[in-house]
Figure 1 (cartoon, rainbow, N blue to C red):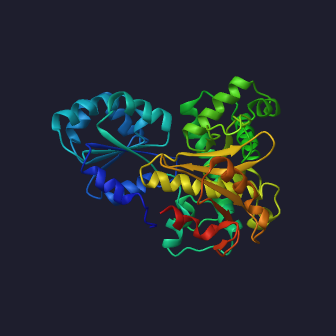
Figure 2 (tube, rainbow, N blue to C red):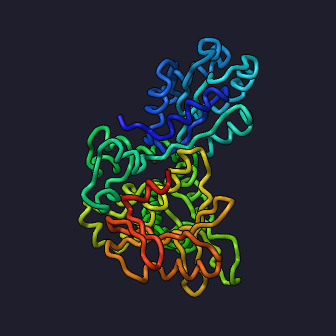
Figure 3 (tube, one colour):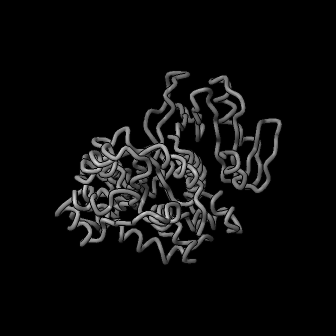
Amino acid sequence: MIKRKITERLLYYSSKYPVLTITGPRQSGKSTLMRSTFPDYNYISLEDPDVLLMIKDDARLFLKNYPNKTIIDEAQRYPEIFSYLQGHVDSASENGMYILSGSHNFLLMEGVSQTLAGRTAIFKLLPLSYQEITKSDIHFQNIDELIYTGMYPRIYGKKLEPQDFYPFYIQTYLEKDIRLIKNITDLSMFVRFIKLCAGRIGQLLNLSSISIECGISQPTAKAWLSALESSYIIYLLKPHHKNYNKRLVKTPKLYFYDTGLACTLLGLENAKQLSTHYLRGELFENFIITEYVKSAFNNVKEPNIYFWRDNIGNEVDLIIDDSIKLKGVEIKSGATFKEDFFKGINYWEKLSKTTDNTVVYGGDVSMETKHGKLISWKDWAEQLS
């Protein structure tokens, strides 16, 4: 089993809060993480219809049978349980009583925020990070293989080929997850919508264009996009808010939480096809930015990240705001260093009056150049630790 970096944080907060809540996409390893980190806890899954019926029939009896040290998986399937848990943990006044998890950020967090605020520590578990993979002695010949394979734990634990995992994952997601969030009757149309989103990775979000091409209304496109966000399929990177020259782009950019899933939606059948694909640069950019998101979540922090672009094409792919200073990161998929890699970052550096800005690229060697710091994609994870 691949060790998850977030494990130590879970153990620490289990001694501080009565309830831990773990959310993240389906198959990101939540159940495995909970059961391995807390092996002496009872494990209950609300995906089991008999268990779900039992709790619905008498929630108080359920808590009486499981008064402490219990994992409740897919807890969002019965949101009423949160109200019962509130009274129970308040009466017991102990820490580490329950571990809750769910694949629907919106459904789970809606119940948690209403009833368990102040009583739970909240964690977000995404698929594996590059650092977690390499520390388990798993290596790739090149970046294209890594991007194409993606990071879902089951691929590595069961030694599956991406084409043997993602099509079934998409089917499971549609059947189990999306129906709980939105009443979508035409699933084939929704699949088309997801594929259109994959074709716009790293681009400014244009709901009007997506809705027209998909053949749906713009409000429907907005609702479907929200469903993809709340179930950890896509995320939107917002433009940086500071206005240096009053000519900034104000539209977010679209990314996927996993590049392997995106590659499957794009119809790629192997890593070699990726090397010449028109979206290779955007998928590489997606990978680098998502690694930062994973690092933040694994440290129980929110990733305060943005991009910057003005209306004449000057751009920085990633702006990191740690509340003390800004750091710019330009992302280039090319494996050979070129001086113009630093063009965008140096332009922004003069406007923002920042230093210590970086270019992450597709090559294997990190180095200091006269233009600035150049970091290999292989070393990017170490920069985030």
